[in-house]
Image 1 (cartoon, rainbow, N blue to C red):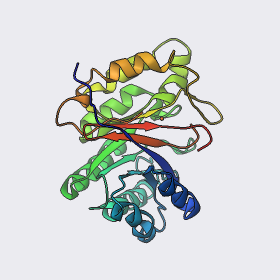
Image 2: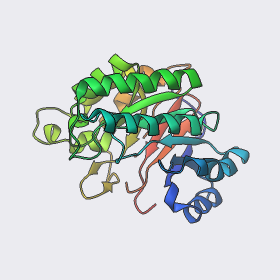
Image 3: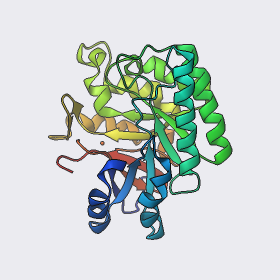
Image 4: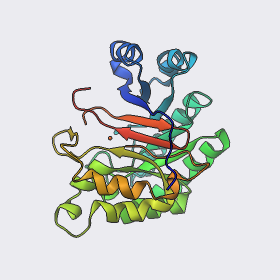
Length: 259
């Protein structure tokens, strides 16, 4: 197995509302940036990320918009959400790593229409492709996106790629009950894997690994996926704050305790 030899770059996450203190801390300590923009004020995105880009520091995007569900059963609500997600694509266009992760079912009270998920995700993927952006969807711990069959089917039907959140998979009720394993979830995603969030489990918060008992087999399997092949631009490893480790052919999101 030919593994990347480049020194990895670790990036920490920052939501728009942590500006400027957290952003300054990240830059001063030599990290890259995993940026979550304000869905109601995309115009501030350049102010937040351009200093990193001008300094040659990598930036990726995490579209965490729980108030804007593009798979919502109500057409007007979902259309409003689509407009917000499209605006996110326009705002990030040409700035940093052209990869963003979106979500279905972040708010448990939202009622999801699975046909509308595919329809609207396809619209987002098509527009993103025209802008040179890769859209990923992420598995969640609960709700419709906790079922890996749904995430895999939506991705294939729409052309989206997948962000595999290991902590969500490990803490998934179906994994906890023994019906599935986190490796089973990975196998369902392997052909569309583009980014990975790596941490040990999610309860009240994201917990970092105590050792490699849980994560070791997952990392071993990740190293054998096409995601790590020559010419790929994917994958990520992920606690309280998300970050990603990036190499030319490898992107890993790691969540670190207390950061």
